[in-house]
Length: 331
Image (spheres, rainbow, N blue to C red):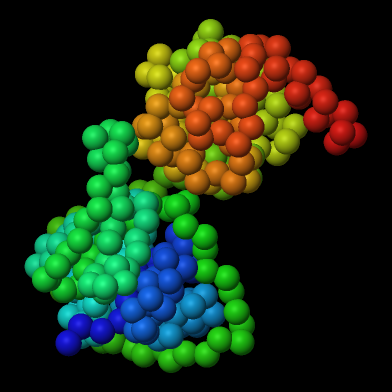
């Protein structure tokens, strides 16, 4: 009988990744609701210390799948390794974070396991009566939310967006077991090869990691407002600049600045939305922010329904005045 909640504890730079810590937080809550153990699947080469980190971050047991061929993520080798781990452990639930690697791994692994997959989820919970996992995911371009339930197949599997859950807190006093699972990687089956890794250049704080994000939207007059008004304010606050899809589609800013359903998911302590109406597509990317401040000339803009603080006004006047005051306070 399937038992336990398993999390794919992704490794990044030889350490437990940020999204893995978030998924361990998600998994811990599911495991507690089911009264079952939380299991971490740690795949890589020389990942014993990472497995122990998974224990410190909430796992009851960490399963390691180690092989020299797993030193870096590769589609087929990681799918093979995870298939071996899951089939041997037989978890009830399997959670994969939607990093670039998780987005690639999840569907392939679900096919191998002949199970259902709730993809691109923003929330997972356990139904108190049925004890089945209920996965919430956006549909219709983010205009509605659907609840997905996998009734019969096991494991119940979901891929979950990053920045939609609190990371598991580290507790060095936690104890658990680390168990190795032997995996064999057939070099002949590796049909893809990583030729080169190119790291995107960025200045300042990464959008996804920023504690303060200031975004602009369709109501802007052009790119000069992003770089002349938003960027100086964001730099003063050690924050990052984001944008709505409309601003990206206009060609005012690059795609990597887009916040929303088809862009980046952010959950800063402070999100300032300037001249953004508040379409569901955009709010899906910033709705988990701790505090949302909306600046818009339209008092009936939908974003005010989601904002903690609303400022009805022209961003070209509000932002410079706000920036000046912040700069004075920080002196």
